[in-house]
Figure 1 (cartoon, rainbow, N blue to C red):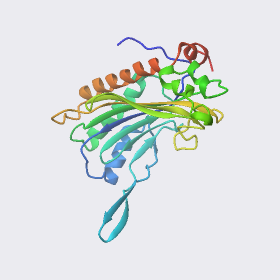
Figure 2 (figure 1 turned 30 degrees about the horizontal axis):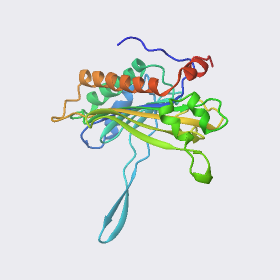
Figure 3 (figure 1 turned 30 degrees about the vertical axis):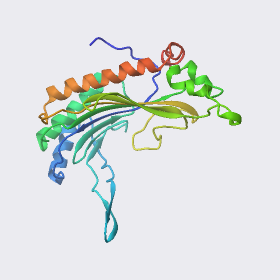
Figure 4 (figure 1 turned 90 degrees about the vertical axis):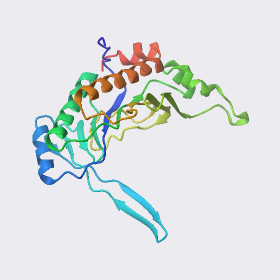
Amino acid sequence: MGPREIYPNPPLALAVVELRHPVTAALSEAEQAALKGCLAEVFPLSRPAPGAVSMTVTPAGVTNEQTPPSPRYMTRDNTASVTFRLDAIAVETTRYVRRSTLRELLRLAVDARQKVAAADGVTRLGVRYVNEVRAGIEGPADWAQWINPDLTNIASLEAGTTGLARSWQGMAVFGDQQEGVVLRHGNLNGYAVNPSGDLRRPTPPPGPFYLIDLDSYWTPEGETPTFDWDIIESRYDAAALNAHALFEQLITDKYRREVLRRDQ
């Protein structure tokens, strides 16, 4: 695996690694304190993630249940976090630099979890990249200058007297149930990643952007492998590189030359 070009002006708004495992018991206050101690050098801030609301329908009616908050630890600049859910570790960053840097954050989280309250195995690994591609356009058809026409050719279709397509969204799945990449794309407006969220991010002016949302995953087949870093690391690298290979096919040389390689 050779070095990949690091673009001076990337469109990446959020990178997430989600490492799922069999459901565990909730972490005790002592275990949460121990996790904080393991992570303090990189993630010194404790900021629990809100619990999710689940709806249950029974003959007696509908009940809503809220899961307790998940332990979450953040960097001082609030651009990266690690969350320990009952069934997963999630590492997120709005300041992605390169694959190896995110991999080290994941390793730190895995080592802390295994030291404090070990998970039993790996059930899924996903690496997600949410890109907001912004470039000069006057209308939807102009996206073909920046994005592979295989995604934007719908702009040339016309629905009778209603005119050309103004917006579109799509999804494509590459691979199979065990390994692949899910692509979600479309021309949108505003932001895909909320600038007012807990993770701070550079905030460009709101306006049109092209979403390239890549979820590259690996799901073990058959037996559940152990929560072993050697297994996790190789699968993380493979998933990240698969996403990178697809991203490079989805953008045009004009976009690389005039936007990605432009100094901020």
